[in-house]
Length: 256
Image 1 (cartoon, rainbow, N blue to C red):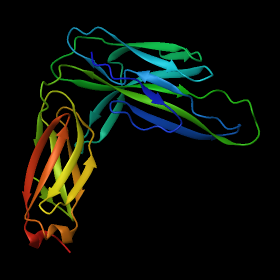
Image 2 (image 1 turned 135 degrees about the vertical axis):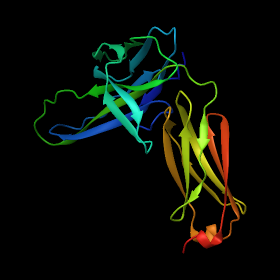
Image 3 (image 1 turned 180 degrees about the vertical axis):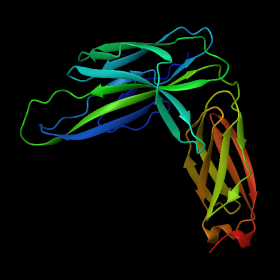
Image 4 (image 1 turned 90 degrees about the horizontal axis):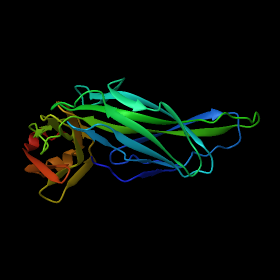
């Protein structure tokens, strides 16, 4: 079982490598309320044949108790590679609600209902901080809560990611790269980098690509740069591996 290190949650949140943290703000009649401080560990779960259950720890570093609500969604991707979330009961998880005392650690247990298959299924376990009841009736402030959406993968992972880069295309002053996952399990695209012969570089971040899904990535290529290039080279980084593709350019197609 892969267990990434805990990710500390503060008033300003950045998405973790495997878990997605969302901050929800609402205008409520109360004195200023700060987001609670807590950590989740691990921030990703993988169930394979033989797995029984796993423990997710919720560590409360705040000076007050924090209430949480847990829910599960199935995670799929549509034809454009966009994430789709659907409520699910495919996994066993409990408790559904938990209060963690200040300085304490609460635990939730998660496990498959049946033996994972060779075709991976993907979920997100949502751990949602519940807002405390407000007692003040004067003034206004932003009440902030945080939801973590932990990736849960159930199935046998491919030993090597099955990455297919379809022929690169030049469209509307951009190079469009379609990346397809032809394997039985997910992988994460760390980055895409477009390189030209004269040192031109265009980069962008990637995201998860689930089994059987594909996503288009558009990397800008201004016409004045396009006309100076004979060939472009694309590197797609997946984990520690690099997958590459080339595009030969016709200056007449570079636009204006």
